[in-house]
Length: 56
Image (tube, rainbow, N blue to C red; front, top):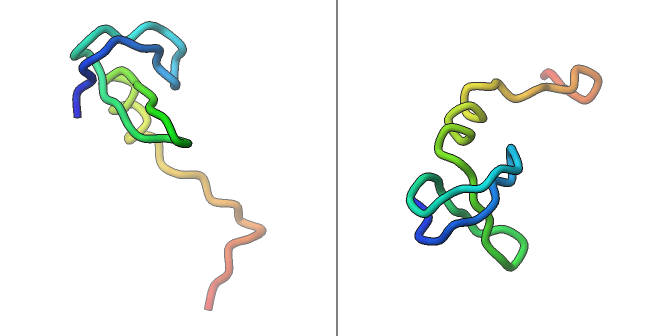
């Protein structure tokens, strides 16, 4: 959901103006991020630790 209040992006550390990003619940509070930062984060594939990866 879009943010109703300004805040600081937890990904890049820059100010997020009202309606320019998203908010989410985190550790008994709220945090915001830019919409662009959220899109960039989704495009990066998760890293796998090859040593802890178990195959069957």
